[in-house]
Amino acid sequence: MHNRSRLGNALTYYTQLNKYLLNVSVLNAEISSDALVIKETIAYCNFLQGKEGEGD
Image (cartoon, rainbow, N blue to C red; front, side, top):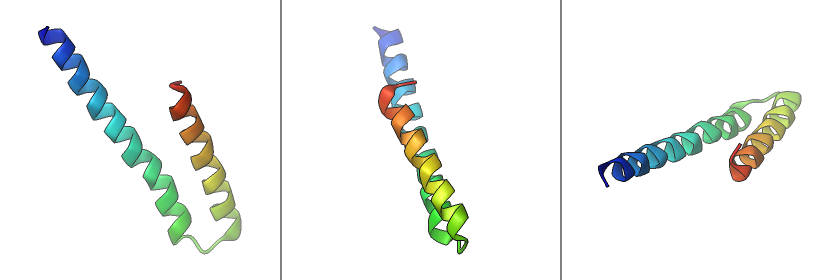
């Protein structure tokens, strides 16, 4: 049972970490004044969120 608790804690930690890291892309798009950078950053963020949703 102890291993399940450790696994659950690890999954929670990495799920939260992934959310924070995905938000970095959004922040980059928000602070940029370059339209191409914004467009490519948003596309990359959407790609990462899609991968996260698929679990890959």
